[in-house]
Length: 135
Length: 287
Image (cartoon, rainbow over all chains, first blue to last red; front, side, top):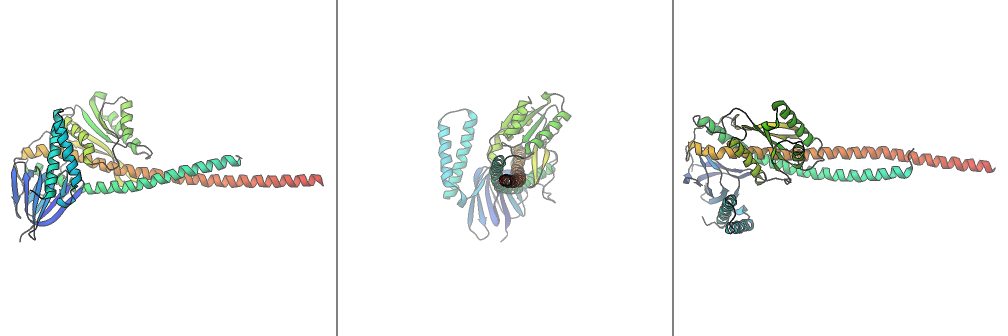
């Protein structure tokens, strides 16, 4: 089977690096599935889960908080401000973050805080979903 | 010759100082290792971002973006990345000297530039001297995360975008090795020297949704990550500088203890000799 190399890199170092069969990512303009030999492409990502089909048929999920996907025929790079493989997600922290964001959204303050809380909530929910595997 | 008790007191106090500096040296050594690792872990990300930005900018030459275009400079922004605490040798002094020098050279009045400061020492220095410090971050942890500088980076990039200033430089200590750190000036904005970090990268990309939209989000991120990268570099330098300074202090303390011990022994010997002479003198007088 043809495979393509996938790199997921964050400011804190590489998170994931492997030869895979397919990558499914959610960009801001919609979901895309990338197979080996895809034409070069760059797209910004949503706060979402990256689904990766490994060469041996197993599936892997990585939570990303935005960032970019850069596709080249032989290599896919994903750059994100933060990214975690499902097993390494700190679920207690994600739940705490979700609760905090919800509280902040309840108490009506000025717009910027509101937006930030909304994004924080989105990231927390994304992490929880990825951790529990319901995507 | 100083009296015995005074010398003894000085030896003890120097020993205590020596213990403290020795401890600080070891603490800095371990912090330096961590900071160095952080800075290293960041390199792949930075290189990747640079690759993507460079290939987009090169591949889509018809795309223009305010951050890529050089405009006539009316006002300049400076970011200076210093430390919160002293006892790091000439770490902050070098930075301050370099920036002051540049400012004196390039600008005639204080209205021609603004300064962003990171670190307490640099912040206080420039505020006290009436420079236009528009934002500062103090109390950063030893292992800062991206969120710690996000606000100041975003503000700096935003002020460039809305035309408050027309170019942005940053000053930080680049980490070369434990004993050598170099004050570095880096132009952050406008983004001009975009060479791919990896050689032989030439690809024409499809852009989803469009090249403009991607540059719109990617370029500010790029500029912010440059600033964060410099901060990590600066932190590694800070700990290394402190470690070296503390090592020098410990060595000095040991040297002082050595001379003082010598002096102490001489003084003790002298007093014993004197006592003996007195006793003999007294005994002779009785005979």
